Image 1 (tube, rainbow, N blue to C red):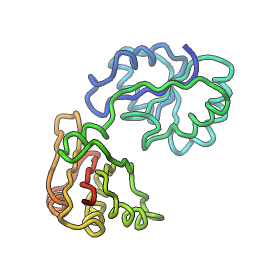
Image 2 (cartoon, helix red, strand yellow):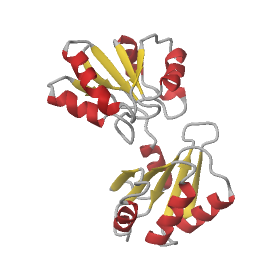
Image 3 (cartoon, rainbow, N blue to C red):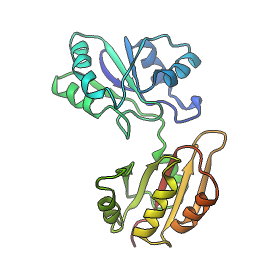
Length: 223
């Protein structure tokens, strides 16, 4: 086994990791982890003692050349994020692109993600959808929201608890208060919850109820 391996990790429940992911993490020479403290808990749970190195959004650019050099010399490196699939709203894209340019073998394992469970739980059309990840915090945010107002496919967004009310309010403003939507939080965890209704209903709910946990927002497309 050699090259770069993209290994999804559970989004909450540690039992959601695949057998193949456990095998790859145990057989790798090194694990690149978004937060080594978070990944350490997973590795300890499955008795994996592979060494780790930090790889996150703040050191990704400067780390890529070194990693590519190490992979060119042979060996196997696994990349994980704190939860879900690396490269999806998490670091990984730059490294994968550099490895492919250097003709290094790259393999991606399937596994846990918050995107699909939230979409299927929403009850909204899932045959055609657009994944927007996190909206831009400042520059380009209004332009993106205006574009989403005309989107006919189901829209899926990620959001943090401290911005969920602001984002739901802006979606209500741009897409209309009657647009159907759901907000799922703490997926696969003890306090998992999905709130359904209109964008205005969701905005009012989380304005009155302090939001906790990471969110996936699913919004009905323009009909």
